[in-house]
Length: 486
Length: 95
Image 1 (tube, one colour):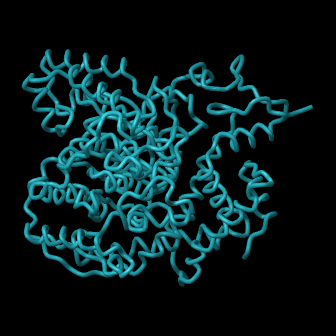
Image 2 (cartoon, one colour):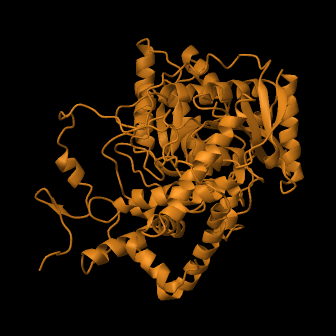
Image 3 (spheres, helix red, strand yellow):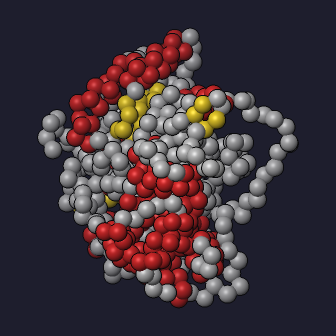
């Protein structure tokens, strides 16, 4: 049961061949059995999950039958969940229990989903490997000496290892798509503003987007239906009407124009990755699409622009952690200044402190124009680059990541870690949607292909991904996880 | 502009972070390496380009000036490391 997709589980629950309580218990048992090896979860709330499952079964017996009713899911530990800890993978919030649910959490609860627990992540979403968590790294189910990617590594690992039916994640520079690629699952970053950020603890407010990690594009569409849409509590959430993302999945791909950016297929790209993406392109061509070579000349600028804008916004967002109103406070502060400084120094991990420092510098007097304002101008150039490309194509196809999952501890130098996100960052700067789908394997490790679309065209991304998945089985492969074997 | 150890300490102070003496050199090295990557931006001509801060160029939406939130003071004070009588407690500020 636990290996089934959400749409399969919905049918099984609907026909009564399984109850939500049985299904929830099955996931709990599997988490207990293998998650000590993977460390995908920070918190598992068995009692709450089973209570929600009973409520779902009761509702079903009284006639409710919605797609997500009784489906066990997990939330990245960046989403506020009332009554269950929300840690953001940080010592700063290790005991924090939110007094309210994030809108994403509330909407999924209202749709009847059961919350199994909170998944591990890089601290405050800053990282590309899940090695920056205060609660220890998550391990990739496809190779337990390897990273699952980040920052939504726990969610990606949990979906890949069947430790939940699907999970929420957040994506600021690639944090849904890259772990999806590393773990062989489907991950969607919707358009900025499509999903409410209320209760999604902030990293970079103009870049952060919440979205699904799932076994299939169809499942991702089911989650997006539940969470997308305007929220008056998030003033950056857009009022543009949503659609039923499951309705357009079956549209044929005839006349679809797919752009392949020349700059992304340079000689620097591992030829094995290039081959897989080119095969994906040919598979889509067989489904009716036309391939078009395009230019994204400004693409290399995404890296420096992102690593100014995101840290700058993070330095502002994380200034709230001062030991006064919530979160970690140092022992025996000598005075107020000491309390602020020691609470923050002791409460934050190294990568978070590094980014706060970069951001502080970029915003400081005398440097604001050269760094922050300059980066925002480059941001406009990056967006224009995509807009121009979309004059000639409907979607863009690229690798999600330059390589497969690397070993834990392999990337000690911060900049070498940042280069991980070279294909994903520009999408966040432009605010447009992107999806990663499993597209093949290299030496037994998954690698994803990324599709990028114009603003508010996540429906098209899900459609293409679904058609690809109807005609391939990369997404159906499962890692073998032996109990008790590292 | 090359940074030195004093710059690192000044930036840390602005951010209310403390870098231990034995960590300053490594912090400076990391910082400098990140800055060289970021300085790639300076090779691009952005004259007359308007900065983009919000991807959809949204402006702040306004709502009616009426009270809509409930008073959750106790619930919120319970989250604090130290609180009493409706107040957050911090080390003495005024002598």
